[in-house]
Amino acid sequence: MAVRARSEALALLAGGGVADLAFRIAQVALPLVVLQETGSVAATGLVGGASGIPVLLSPWWARRARQWVDSGPRLAIVAAVSAFALAVVPAAAAVGLVQPALLVVSGLLLGIGDALSTPGRSALLADTGDRWAPGKAVVLLTWQDGARRAGMLVGPPIGAVAVGTGFTTGLLWVEAAAVLAGGLLACSVRAERAAQELAAPSIRESLRGRRDVLYGWIARGTGCLTWFAFTLGLSVIGAERGQPGIYLAAGMSGYGVGSLLATLISIAVVRRVAPVPLAAMAWMMMGLCWVGMGVWTTPPAVAGFGALSGVTVVLGIAAISLLITRSSEGAERRALLSGQSVVVNASSSAGLLIGGPVIAAAGAEWTLVGAGVLTGTVALGVLLMARRPTSQSCSSKAFSSTAESESVR
Image (cartoon, rainbow, N blue to C red; front, top):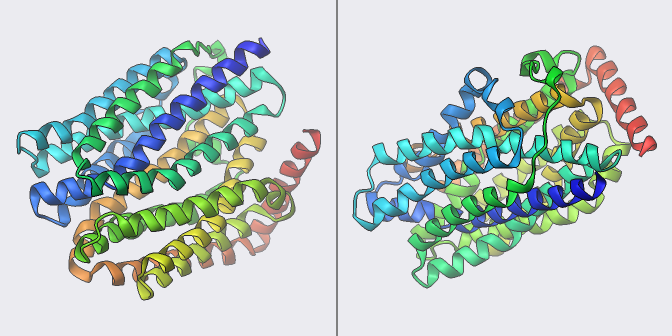
């Protein structure tokens, strides 16, 4: 059982890592392809923005559908849908038919796939960890996050080099193929859910008694909402300054380095610091970093601020994720993981949807400053709420539960 669980975990990690690396590489290219084909800055975020609509509505339409993704073959089917959605854009670009309506359709299909595959892969990985050995669920989810951060480190520079050599549209084909391959790698995973788990609780039901998780989602969701200022903003700055891909590559690479370093200390920090204050401080610092990028907009400064924000955000994410995985299991844990996916994907996609017009109206540098101020302000509000007596008691209880679970491990 343990040997099979280990091989299944490796397959899930490898598939997710391949797909995420391709996404980080193609992230440099997609805004440039859309900008080149449409000539509109406002259109650069349409795919990402439209993909947030199915994710935002997924607590209703996907409540049963996400329970269907209970094995590797079913995850592969969802990956095939996502690969098709990704391939639509480069296929249209090849024949000169990139239009806003087509970008929206591609985004909607991609959002359907993301709403099912992101929590589905994480739930399968956590379930596989439970079958492997006690405490492995959190370890595997941490490794999954580490693989994503490694992709942040190496992906953007590869994308920048590829864009510089004229392989811009080709990167989108590579991403589609990688997503499909990642799904096929998971086909060996045949985990089955127990019958009593089919009637999983809703996200709202799973949040009862977990006010800390809600506070953490508010801080993280705001950061995801304003994330477009970092990705789209830096892409636009590079294009406007005649250095396409350079600024985004610098920022994402710095973020990747910082986040990888933070991965090494995240568990130890979470053991010693209450999760909500840690999460709030993390996104307050990220907001300050984005203000810094807007004021000192050079590749070295962007890389430095990106690294610092990577360190702090990883600590915040670790606090929330560990709180979820250590305080829940089974169907309830899957519902919370789905809820976290909804918060992250829906808020970031909503930001992308409005990001193009905002950047076009205010300018990329001022957008970075405004996004940083908003993110920091909301995080400060979360910190103040967490210090209220009722929140403090919840934090203490949740932190105690986390510490006990760590000691058992």
